[in-house]
Image (tube, rainbow, N blue to C red; front, side, top):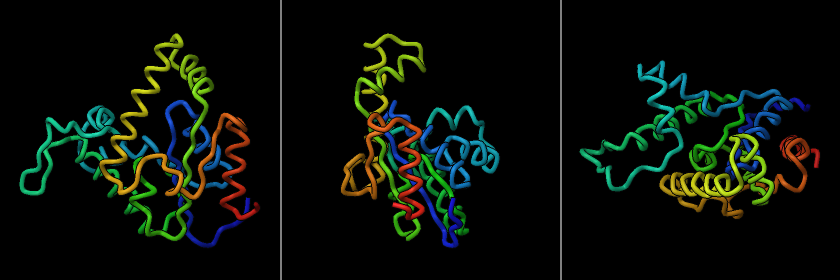
Length: 199
């Protein structure tokens, strides 16, 4: 790949079942950047002395509006505290000048002031996403469709709680791409070419 002098941060948001996570893995390998996804929970857990299992439960989850209220500026919503810990973590990494690929976590909003940010939204055709989830979770078609709808609803709610723009709204991303058209490998290659300015 090309050698990039300046900081580059690739934010990949994705519909459930679109293969966005695998695409992020491919892109990070291809351009030799660290990938941040669920792995940041481990470091947050260690730093804050919290059980990792506890964090996993609240990762990228919308807060339950009925259960949460703010007291003296602190929220008693674990989901919200979790979200802010993650935002803080990726802000720190960006501030240190590190280049990386980050999956989800409202990163295109949290890091919007960094000029090296490239934001990508990966979507997919329902039948392709359904087939992928059926295989991955060993589910029948009906359950897979339900799972996709449930996960996307959560992602949308989570994102929209912390962001001024709507999840998946193409106007706010540098690039929106349907991974079902090209397949994961070629989608990753296209993103890589876009980042490195080859296109």
